[in-house]
Length: 77
Image (cartoon, rainbow, N blue to C red; front, side, top):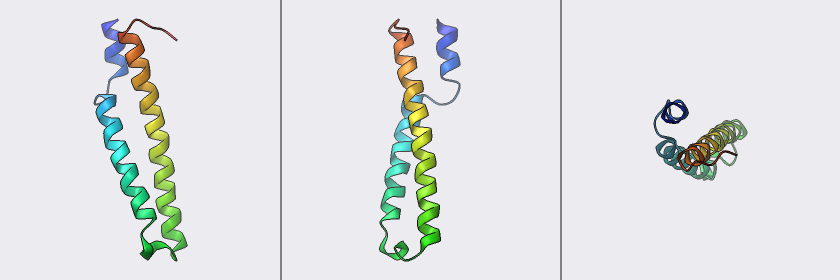
């Protein structure tokens, strides 16, 4: 079981990474609402693309974290 847990957390602990991604997502959303960008379609598109990418990575990390917690608790879904 320990080997499986180690395999799940090859990178920094998912919980820490989730916190970083959530903070980055919040910053990007604030940037998206920046009045200076409201008339700059390319900048809005760029920021929205970054938001989409971070949201996807966040979902993957949350799933990894959930799997890790299930493994630690002996639950296999």
